Image 1 (cartoon, rainbow, N blue to C red):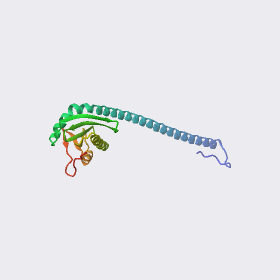
Image 2: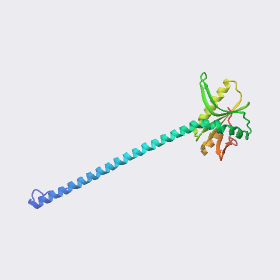
Image 3: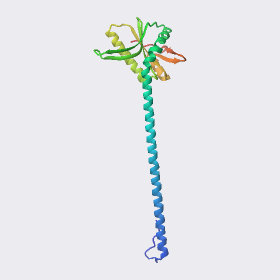
Image 4: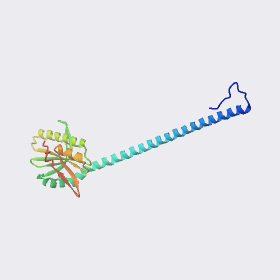
Length: 211
């Protein structure tokens, strides 16, 4: 702030003018600081708006990605029917299973409240292998398939089906931890290998779970 002459000082034009000049300079500095603060606030607001636009664009891209994944998932049924099923019979035969039927299956039993879909159900007179196919299986998918197997067992018992039920999960991309967890739960792992795919059997410290 400017220096104002003391009351007992002799007032002269020069002293008064100097005080006014000092006050004016102080006011200019205050105005400059206010303008700088306003510019900072405007820049902050601009950054917030830019971030909001970026978040909206990211959300739009994520929604588009989910939509494409959903469309891919909807096409899995056709892929299973025309590409995977015939090869599954051959691959499981290499493990000692001779399945005579392989179909996509849907069960709607309103009386017993059993509703489920199986991407690939491989059958013979003794055993049934229920295969769930995912683009990238996760832990929830594994738990869901175990629940599906339990429903299959319940449905089979209601229809006097005494065959052994086994489960498998096929993944286009299979993470190592998910693969180990699948085997730990007694499910077969099916994963791509070159132009075909491999089937990994739970063995060693793990063993196939029978329902």
